[in-house]
Image (tube, rainbow, N blue to C red):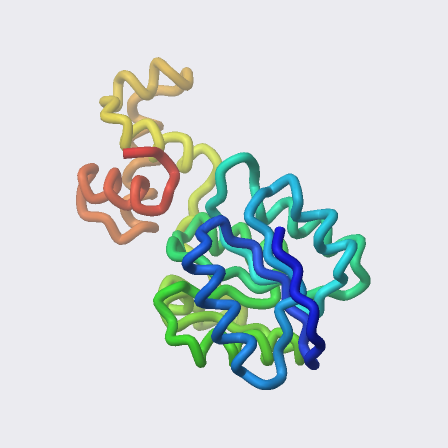
Amino acid sequence: MMEMTHTDNIRVLIIDDHKIVADALSAVLEDSGDIQVVARVSKPDDIVSAITEHRPDVVICDLEMPGGDPLDRAAEGIAQSNGSKLLVLTAYPTDAHIARAIQMRVGGFLTKHEPAEAVVDGIRAVHSGHAIYSDEVRDRMTADKTSSQAELKVLTLTPRELSVVRLVAQGMTTVQIAEAIHRSPKTIDNQISSALTKTNSTNRVELSRWAIREGLVKA
């Protein structure tokens, strides 16, 4: 963990294990004029103590880190830090990641494909209490015309459909899946058909690619 010493208006803590990324982000934020990087954390085990010690206004959290789940650790620290806001910054905005972040009520979700000024503006927005999402993230959300609540494809799948999709992506046939989860082949076919519709996939190959892309299974 690297601690910074000077003072600015918005106190930020960065969670990222890639030093080049953390260095570049720190430089951009320090040049903004109203943001101070109070600490940087590169190990999951240090996250909770860093947040509770520095009590930042905004915690910027990557989602992929060896040795533990940084988002869970960040949420744990924030629960003890009296009002810190959480902003996800990741290179992998999968439906599964976005759905989880929304369920955890994060303040914002930005991708590392954003220009530097968008990240700075995102921090200011989250600090002010506004929800902020990258266009890339919003494109993955489909708004129901009869509802004001946005919904992600992965959230439309039932738990059983998710299980079946994972098995399809592993190359299992309908009969094999039916035997594995003790359901009839007809039931499995119906669940696959439903998953195809909900994910806008035209066949099992596309469904498998979607599952791999969204991190439901490993390639």
